Length: 317
Image (tube, rainbow, N blue to C red; front, side):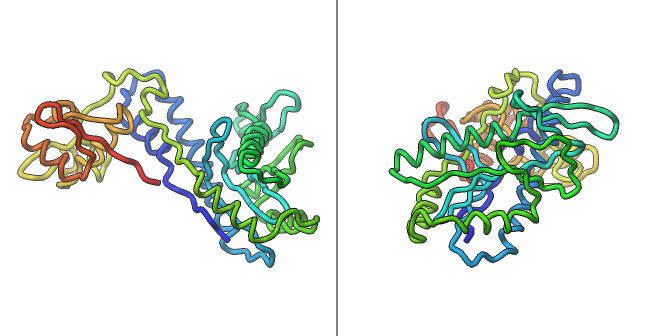
């Protein structure tokens, strides 16, 4: 049973907004672009894992939690957690192109692309260790005693692994159901109803990861960001306010709600609140009354009165 599904990846949204608003000459553009590519590939991989559990039926009672984030003695972020009466299984999903090698004793993996480029990343073994320790600490706090297992999942069936690790198994997507069934053959540790209670507890402990403001996280000076409303169709032209709508100067697309994305990007990139003046400067409009109306129509959290009024946005999963 799937107890928790994937939520919206706000970190990816924030990175995409940052890339769009950074000047072309900014030193971080290439780094942000690569990070977006990695995040996008990772989400594709995790989506494939979701389909595996949607399409496979287990006879035993197991509970699936996708994209789980909680705090015990530190913050844990787990791609997928499987709870059974026999064990808890942490699945770390990787969707990495090229030939991959686990570099023993370094805490890294290397990958070689077809063009000969070599890149290094943190080993998923380290990530499983970290999340396993944090899950163990949470279980201790809740007086739960159940083995914690881990496995790396390769979402690309053509992935080649040159050097295998010996710490945790490395599985392709199609191997996951059989792997879980083999582990379930071991002696039951807790009652099936307790496994469900543990899964429900973890859902309640889930705390969505909040990466905002992105500029603070990446040490970007907010004064360098491009201002204005980007076209909602061509994504390149800038839109100007005209007769209760926004018009793109490049493709002439009309969209009366184009400002919503721009204001959302302010909250993602700059900070947790915005004033009327800041919003006018960011959107490139002069009317105090217009911006006040636009902000109020977005159902934001309003605090203060008059010139001290501020607006805040809450981000849902």
